[in-house]
Image 1 (spheres, rainbow, N blue to C red):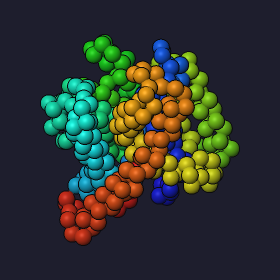
Image 2 (image 1 turned 45 degrees about the vertical axis):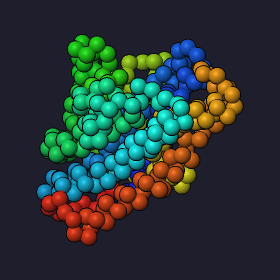
Image 3 (image 1 turned 30 degrees about the horizontal axis):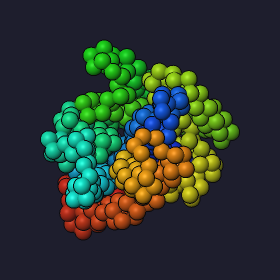
Image 4 (image 1 turned 90 degrees about the vertical axis):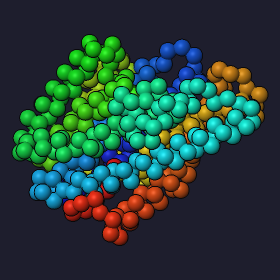
Amino acid sequence: MPRPENLKPLTTLRIYAAAWVVLYHYWPLLVAGARPGAVEKGYLGVELFFVLSGFILSHVYLQSFGEKRFSYGSFLWARLARIYPVHIAVLAGLALLIAAASAAGFQAGDEVVVWSSLPAQLLLLQAWGLGQEGGWNHPSWSISAEWFAYLAFPAFAMIFWPLRARPWVATGLAALLVVVLNLVFPLFAGHPLTEATTAWGALRIVPCFALGCAVYLLWRNKAVVSPTGAKALTAGLIAAIAAGAALTIPDLFMVLLFGGLILALASLASSGSNLMGSKLGVYLGEVSFAVYMVCIPWELVFTRVARTALGLPEGLLPWPVWALMFAGVIPAAMVVHHLVERPARNAMRAWEASGFRLGGRREVADAT
């Protein structure tokens, strides 16, 4: 069994995934027409997060589940503390911005203010086929999908814990699930699974999360033991993912490559390598959730202010203004991370530690 290491390369990986998603969303404000292949695949940064989530949660909780030390209530409380405060803060911030814009004579637009979907947003059900009208902070559909995976974690654990000594069997089954769901889903939905958000987002996470669980078992069983091998595998997979994105290969192959990359980076951490383990990289990885959650509100605010202050017309932004918007999402996220995310998470955990319980033994380990 691997010791509970701080897997710094995987934390750093999160900022690259978040930046990829942000680039995908912001690109149409820089260049008209189709996105380049590497940018067009940016929505798959969400898949990378989903696979990583399955790996990390298995790393933190699977052993305790198998040894019957797992507290489902405390697990859910810790996961809620991780995602919900930022979600609610961004929703509240959007409401204030909409009210201020309305008072100033600007209209937020029907794409943002969708009252019928607000209950689903508040209950983290917007990726479960509820609140399909969308609106508000659209990227939050993915944390609704994450919430679904958290609720279903015992089911994943019941499947993968018995396979802990047969990691390649587990990985083969998870890979098969990725392939089958990605091939079958479009036949019924009319669009790829990797494009599902409010309607089928809860299903979209399932094969990715399962793959992350299986990859954890590979790492646990030291599938990659050589530091040289880990570095070579990391370099090869980064090159393959970059080439696959540029060539727009089918998404299911990209997802499988993500699983390999996470295994390689976790193995690097086990070998003591400092690759992708710098303090700055780890810090930005810690801020990445806020980056993802504020990217659309930041775009709305920045573009409105920039167009008004600089007299810019609607449409494309000059590249220096666009670059400032893209870079500016980091400090905006830092504010949310330090003023909302960390204090609220710590407060919720302190509340539980002081006597509030949701049943059973409390897990104290953090999960990304």
